[in-house]
Amino acid sequence: MRALAYFKKGDVHFTDSLPEPKLTSPKGLLISPSFTGMCGSDLHEITDGPIFMPKDGETNILSNESLPLAMGHEMSGYVKAVGPEVTKFKVGDRVVVEATISCVDKHRWPNAKNANTPMCDACKDGCENCCDYAGFSGLGVVSGGFSETMETIEHHVVKLPDFVPMDIAALIEPLSVAWHGARVAKFTEGKTALVLGSGPIGLAMTLVLKARGAKKIVVSEPASIRRELADKFHVETFDPSKHGERAIAELRSIPEGGNGFDFAFDCSGVAPTFNTGIAAIHYRGVYCNVAIWGKGINFNPMDMTLQEKNLTGSIGYTVEDFKQVVDAFEKKKIDPKECEHLITGRIKIEDGWEKGFLELINHKDTNIKILLTPNNHNELD
Image (cartoon, rainbow, N blue to C red; front, side, top):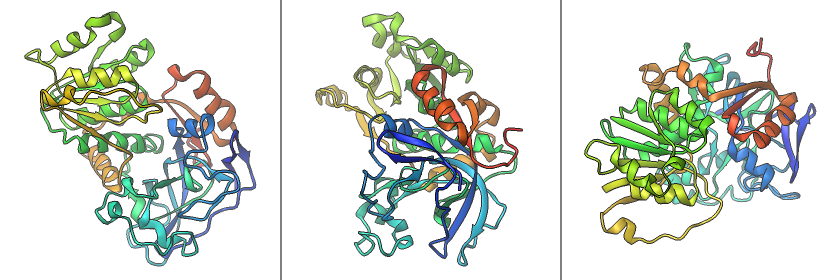
């Protein structure tokens, strides 16, 4: 089949000869992807990896799969085939795929290295995103949505409302990352929130906080192009570079009462945003890290302790987050028209390296979400 695949470190290219997946589970589904988003995690696999992908000559511990593997884990599509025990879906259904693969999936590969090991404690508790062996479809375990066909199981699939376009549906994955962060932080309606960074996840977090009834949202972003994108969501934006050493004091003064925010969501993952997020919340406020960090930082626990502030982190999502995001669309809490602002390109997988990855690498500030379409579903007509 046609695919944009990871062949080895430094080698990602289009192929028309990747083996097409087959159903490996009676609860399995084959999906024909419509749109699949290009993610920062995909870029890290190319620039810094392999991280999730198997190393050259090695196999994944869950699936026993080796390279090459099709990339892509932010996908919408149509059900192409179903296993005999699938009860919730039929061929032709419009769906999104929650890409996490965990102990829940081990039955799919009875000959894999850890097929007979006990389920990890996180998966026993329903926290599959924290699985000891966690990986993703399209990112390490099996081929994903940069292909004509991908395989998953019923557990990971959510049906789409008819009114949500397939390109917008591919954004449900990054929206679920943000939704999970708000859920982990225990964000509640009527609270104030600071979003640090307006890249793909920062903008998704802004949409999610609006959907969850935030009283006030401020997006802090030094890059003017990305601030302008946040402006389109009708929230207040803040340029920290204009205020120098007074930036934190200025931010704290914005919410009513002038004493800081109830919540801060770090979607950048650098020392200045961490320090700003901690300082900008008030006593017993919540700082939630949603970003993927490359390096650690110095941290004084007394910055939290003296005002009993709360620090937490959020990684990925579970299928429950996908269901809640879809429900938010159905209840008109997330507007598909607003979501369109996140999409900065729609291209075919044949052009995925030159017009996709290289575009993101060389023009990061002007791109948010480039979508690839592997199949002739008329999305680009």
